[in-house]
Length: 274
Ligand code: C2E
Ligand code: CA
Ligand code: CA
Ligand code: CA
Image (cartoon, rainbow, N blue to C red; front, side, top):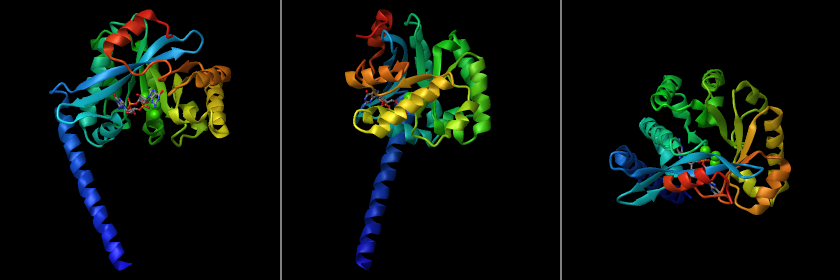
């Protein structure tokens, strides 16, 4: 048993080394990604239930490294988030997202902000300055934040959200249902909509629990006067079920995968999906 124990420890150590090397490599690569032109954004349409009108697009970051090909944001965002790199990336994402707005007739752009960005010193002032300098109406910018960003320091977050909302920004609570927010506390925050996490939409057709959760979130959202966006809608059956449940907005591969700036522009001009 003792030998086995040592073996496990050694394996674990090697695993750690490997892991740390990989993280360092990603950090190093990311710090140069902007300068090397390796970053880009793709845009995924958000549609309104009734006529599938495209009312906005979520901006999603892509990193295509010259040496190793594409790396998923699910891998590099958490690493950037542990360092100040997230600020540099976030500033770049915001700048690009605001530029693309000029090409769309009416849609908004929905931008992901990580908890660290949201808690950054002078977050509101910086954001307002950037948006004003770009000559953009804040009502065309939706800020996506997760529960983790707001529930750790709820009072301060509530204050930040209030200010943003006063200035006209839209606020979406992302991945809703996966965090540990108390439903009661949701009232404290100035929000425009809840985004139901993909995992619940995915489970809807298979498990009663997921369907029940989706229904509860839709009812809760509406009771609080919020919009509800279902994310990760992949099938016609999910679309119909969400329509019946009264969900106001949807997003997912069934309508469109995230697309390049050019394709997004065509979709924005056409205004309706399908
Ligand atoms: P998220 O904000 O929850 O974004 C939704 C993810 O679901 C995206 O993955 C999107 O491509 C994917 N998706 C959309 N529709 C479907 C569908 O119908 N089926 C399936 N299977 N997937 C779908 P992506 O682009 O890989 O991004 C992963 C995560 O990385 C995002 O999750 C977000 O947390 C983070 N991220 C991406 N871009 C940014 C960014 O610019 N800033 C920050 N802070 N985080 C970002
Ligand atoms: Ca998001
Ligand atoms: Ca999400
Ligand atoms: Ca998600």
